[in-house]
Image (cartoon, rainbow, N blue to C red; front, top):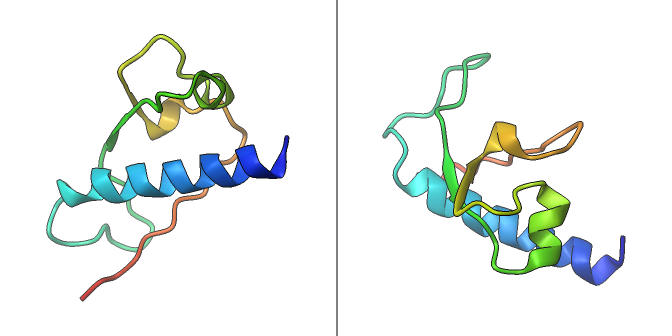
Length: 78
């Protein structure tokens, strides 16, 4: 994958994750707990849609991403 596309994808996924967490519960999940379902908007770029495996949808959830591993970084703002 081209570095520019990979960087763009990483940036978009991070932004979408932050937006998704804005509506999440007030407290973080317990250690070893399960993340709440996060609904994300599908990127407009068709290449990114294909990369994520979410072509033809308007929204998607983390388990729908076609990947062996999905890394989610959670920032504690307070």
